[in-house]
Image (cartoon, rainbow, N blue to C red; front, side, top):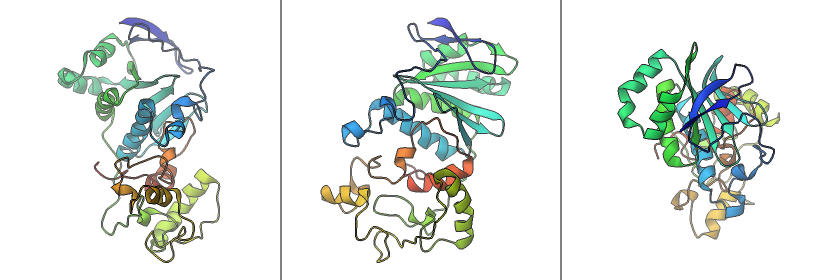
Length: 290
């Protein structure tokens, strides 16, 4: 393990501990386009199957959005911050072959970590011990390339902040063949009108669409919007001889789900309401134990 300098835009240089040979350069890698580059290719070259790094990207967003109601603030290049007001819970940096997770632990968070440090791997405790503590806390940078590493980081994030998202009730839930919650969709014919009006402004901000008048009664109804031309999910299931996507061993799949491709690490900016109404209703299992 060696100490390396990491330069942040809005603060002085700070020292963090990194595995030997691993650089934490803040500058954007010119070979990577965080919005459409190889690490975020969404499985296009693999028939819908995600690469290990794409799995990390997808699971990171599913976890953060499922547990927390936060604003997502990107710089349009290589950085995504999860924020509650002015407080940053987690910062993710997009690199060519990995993601760097930045966490800052204050006094109470350090005490919580110390009480549980035996639960963590030598890599995590080594980075923790080597990170310098400043007036605003201990700055720690963790390279993440596998789901196993991400599972440890989830525990650190939970130390940083307790979950604050209240899941939608499943009472009266209506599921489509793709596994998504029809009853959480703005187009659902049985949608509560008050809720629909709450949905429309953030949906308009996210997608730039102002006409949300189309109505759909769900996959098995005569008013299903794709009854004449199967949506990608229905078409894929039919090709595999399945009645619904949920019967597929590869489900959930970023190829089939309406907005699951948006459940990847990105560098755009969206407020919490946009995430709640513009993405989560269309991501399988977002509010379910898997």
